Length: 140
Image (cartoon, rainbow, N blue to C red):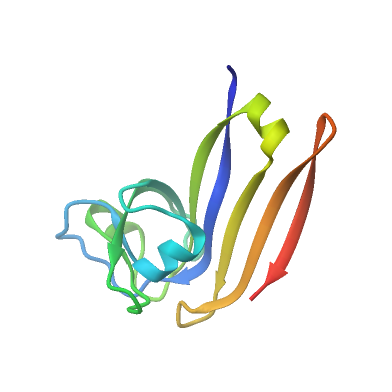
């Protein structure tokens, strides 16, 4: 069956709290932030640095709950610095036919300057007959 890759989670405008070049790869993210959008530890993520345009892929490591930590590690620490704003995306694959039956939900956390949830958004693909309708639901 043909598959399609869809964004299922996004941490939008999270702020880098540290950058650790001496760690072996990954990005450390507060476990609470990961849980709120559904990113799993060791899951591949794509990252965009809004301050300098750098983009990279790595995997998520859970940081201490409540720490608000966002820490690029290893080589990625050279692509960002403390205070930079990042967008962190995670994807999942779906069978196209299953998508037309069950739809899809993407969860987005928009962070404030302290890496706390300023706004929570769900983007839905909803099955309407043989088509998908896009809907955005705002919450907090």
